[in-house]
Image 1: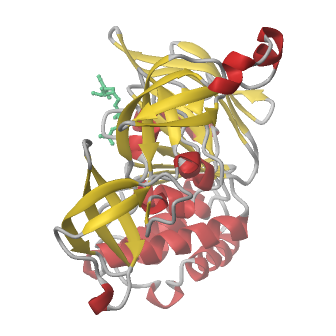
Image 2: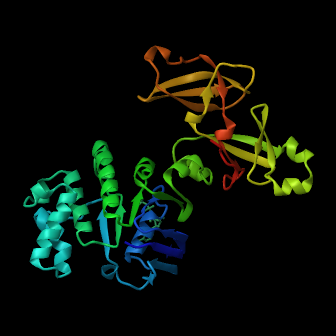
Image 3: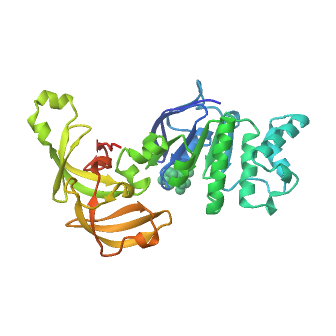
Length: 377
Ligand code: ATP
């Protein structure tokens, strides 16, 4: 098991940067996911690690060893791809044994290691079958066994579950996660599916247009998105434009104190105004990002600032209900509540009072690039 270091890695196709200045360290035994929309550069980055591509700038290290010029077959990597890439005419056993044969492992050890790998993916009983009459999930398990049987220092997986149906995907992703932890093998996983990434990863790198936008554990990516792209790509967010000026506290305080302490911003939103402690002094247009499940529909108690609204639609989603609420003088926002008894569902045209819970929102600068206010929970 080894850590992987990317030291300012850039990969061009022509003049376009498919990977732009990737700079990060993946820890030993970590399950690390590259997540982003189609074309963001995740496969290119993975292929650079594998040695299929050579980066134009920067260095890649496996442990302390710089591997820029080490060919793929000497990098000791196990790989699993979307299309399984297994040999349909060979038995399950022969498929898994393939990598050992190439490494001249003797017959006795091959038998032992292949059976060990097949047990790990629960396929030992199918060792003499051929993959062509097996299910997609079983074929993907063969591919997984073949990747781990060589005892790689690094496991790379590129959208390994995308050919499987939804239910099997969920089962396989938790199997992969458990196996990865059992083997404690450093793993880099590529997916465009945010739910999958949140479910399996120790940490996620969100990519957009070749550039890594944020690297953090799943719960932090969700709760503290680093910019508007991440807030929009991971989970659902309501985006509301607002204006920020220096808050009363900031204006009153001594200039030096203000510079040292966190600035207070006065946010003007939908005719109301709120003071929030900012990450740095800022004035101008801001973008609020509010998670639907953080917003509350409440009865007015005179204490909290509530915004009046009307329910425009009700979507029952099983464990939760999504209400589209038109705010008075404002946009339509998505508000989600835990599902209740059917007769307690709110109704279309019902008047409601909305508590935006701005302290649990994230606020970005006008361009959506930087966090101006970080949610507090
Ligand atoms: P997907 O999920 O669709 O595979 P991705 O995030 O993995 O997308 P890449 O396949 O890494 O994205 O592609 C990144 C960018 O590089 C894209 O703009 C793509 O068109 C371009 N690209 C990828 N491979 C090549 C290539 N061999 N030659 C030229 N351009 C390429």
